[in-house]
Every structure is written in C-alpha cells, then in structure tokens.
Amino acid sequence: MGVGDAHTPILPHSIDDMAASNFNFADPPALSEILKCTHCGLCLNQCPTYRVLGWEMDSPRGRIRLMRGVTEGLFEVTPTFAEHMDVCLACRACQTACPANLNFGQMVEAARAQALQTLPQKPLPRFFRWLVFKQLFPHPRRLIAAATLVKFYQRSGLQSLARKLRLIPPGLRESEALLPRLPDKFFTPTSTPLPCSNGGGAGGGGRVAFLAGCVMSTVYADTDAATVRVLARNGFDVAMPKHQTCCGALAIHAGERATAKEMAMRNIDAFLPPSPSPVGTGEGEGGKGDGNGGYAAILVNASGCGVAMKEYKDLLADDPEYANKAREFSDLVQDVTEFLAAHGIEKPTREIRARVTYQDPCHLAHGQGIRAQPRALLNQIPGLQLIEMRDADRCCGSAGIYNITHPDIAAEILDEKMTNIAATRPDIIVTANAGCLLQLQQGVRRAGLKAEVLHVMDLLDRAYR
Ligand code: SF4
Ligand code: SF4
Image (tube, rainbow, N blue to C red; front, side, top):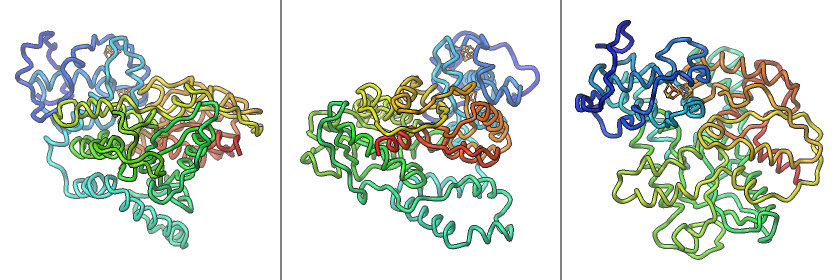
C-alpha cells in the first residue's frame, strides 16, 4: 500500500508486528519514540507546514503515523513518503507542544536518511548532494575557496551584470538573491588571532573552545569575531582547534547520516584529542588533558549547530569507538548565550538607543529550550528597548536549506513572520542562528523594512566597543 491512500488501516498498538518493518537500513526512526505518540493532536497548530498546507500528512502526527506504518510493514518508503518528510522544516515546534516529550527532530532526520538510501536519486540531485555534503562542507579549505569565488563574483561586477542581463537560471535566482554580501575577511581557526582575556571579567574567566562553523565563519565571519571578543571581554580564553570542521547539521537534516557521523568524529578528535598538547598555544590543539580537553565548555553561536553537537551522543551511540567520547563532547556543548547568561556578563557601558525585537531560532527555543538567556543578555545593554513580537518562536522558514528546496512554503512562512516583526517597528531584529540571519535579511529586503538584522553577539560586541 502506498502512502497517502485515502483509506489506511487502523494501526495496531502492539510492537509484535514490527519485524515486518519496511525501513531497511541502519538507524531507522526509533520505535520507542514512534510509540510515544498518542495522536492527541496538540502539536498540529504549532506546526508551520500543517498551518500552511492544512494536510494531516504534513503535520507531526501525520508524519509519525507514516513512520509507524512503514515500521509495521503497512507502507513502503515511497517518493510520497519522502516528500512528506522533506516538507517538514525540522523546526521542532512539535517537540515543545508534545506532552509525550517526543524527539521529533531526530525521528524526521532518521526517516529522511531511510528514504535517501531506499529511493533511486536522479543524476543532478545526486551530483549536487555529493558536491555539497561530501566535497564541500567537510573540508574547511574548500569551503573558504568557494566563498572566495562568491566574493569575487559579488565584487567584480559580475553579479550586477548577471542580474541585469538575467543570466542566472530561474532555479537559482532565489538562492542567489538570498546570499548577503560576504565580509572582507573570513574567520578561520588558523588565520585569526584570538584576543587574549585578562583572566578576570564577570564570568570569572576560564578556558573555552569555540566552533567557528561553516556558514558562520564565511558569510557571518564578523559575528564569529564579535563572539570571540565578547567572550574575551568577559574573561574567557578562547581556543579554536584548527582541525575542526562543519558540525554536520546540514548533512543530518538532509538525511546524509554517514557523512554527518564522519564530521562528528572529526570534531570530537579535534576538540578532545587523545594526546593533550600544552595549554595556551592560542590555536587550541586541545587542553589540559583532564578528560574534557581542559575546556569549561565547547561553545557555538549557531543554534542549528548547537543541537547537532549536543546530539552527537545519539548519532554515535552505537559506535564502539566513539560512543563514550561523543557523550563527553555533547555534555560540554553550550550555546554561547546559554553559557554567558549562566556565568553573568560585564555590563556594557555604551548605550544603544534602539527598538529591538528578538526572533527565537527554532533550534534554540524548541531544540535546546533556550529562550530567556538571549533576552537576558540583550536587556543588559543600556538604552535598548526589547519589544516582543507575536509568535517569536515560530519558524521563519529558513530551516537549513529549506528556503532553497521549498521556496514557496518558506516564503509564505516568512511573510507571516515579517508581518509580526513589522508590527514591533524595530530598528534592529536580533536572532542567534545562521539560517535565521539569512532568511530575515531576505525578509527585510522583501518587506522594504529599514531594520538591521544582527546576531545577539553582534549587538553585545557593539555595546562593549
Ligand atoms: S518539526 Fe516543525 S514542520 Fe516538522 S512536523 Fe514538527 S512542527 Fe511541523
Ligand atoms: S502532540 Fe505529541 S503525542 Fe500528541 S499527536 Fe503530536 S506528536 Fe503525537
């Protein structure tokens, strides 16, 4: 029976039938999670895709029902099944709403990986996946080289010419328009001198490690630099292990599980090296060797990366060599706003007289339960007026590369977000994730707003200068 047929049988409630599963590859959606769903429907109105499409199979409950049907052998993994999983934003708003405490994010990621391995891929998408997930993101130097090419395209006049002559293929126009002007300098662990703290500060000092990220270190390199300055200002020595790589979040979301596991292992080796090297080298090849790399925390300033890194322990739970190390790594990961709010910050002295509204990134609010901390940091800035928008924790439609793969749905979600933002009449829109920054910058352009779009760390850094 195919997915989406009008009359599907009543699902059995026993796990005895599960041997017939049509998920045929390793790491299927966890049966224990599937069985937690009581079909109560409390998640439906919180689900952006259900709100836009109004179709049960594009709700959390519907998607879980599909996963259960495949697990019980009632459905096959078909292109229709894959599409219902792909339309999900993986925003995890359903996790917040769900009284059964399901980890829906991990379930949908696992379902996508099953579909990817089960269904034949067309040559062009297969090539694109190979290029992006295997040849580009796991290799920081190649990523910098690609970003340098984009920077040349933007600054040499080629971009204006291509737009004027309408040379950009229709399928790429939306993605091309999304990309903001790249910064003059990228942020790389090997090339960026770290500011040194004086070991004091409100936070009490200490040694932390920082993941620079792929999009953050290129498109938002200035935000990475601002993050390190804010940490140093608050007394923390920041190490950036030079063999770190992209966290793998985009690969996990896209179902590229094997690639994501390789990236997770590389980061674990980079941040928690087996043989410790001396402390205070600036590049941070490890720490004191006290079992956690010598770091008080491994910090990240993009919430999508934060969730992925906090969940390395689940991704690698069955790996005999990495399971324990992954647990150790994940337990050290914190979002930079979570870390600074917990330690307390030095109060900035520079006034920023602005109306500011804060967009909760889904992976911070729903994925990590971090809502108060970014607001607490913003409220430390003198003169700043924080105005809450309606539904601040509802997805902006970015969701990794969703605004490229599903531009129409993403645009509809973004329009609702921009209406809520505009109602606060902001001078500055603040958020804490790379994808949200990109999407909101696009939203500001489309809505013709005059507001700046910044990361919490950008604004805090500005208030310290
Ligand atoms: S993750 Fe977001 S889009 Fe996907 S089912 Fe849950 S609420 Fe809906
Ligand atoms: S809220 Fe949770 S238990 Fe209820 S239908 Fe949604 S996923 Fe299932």
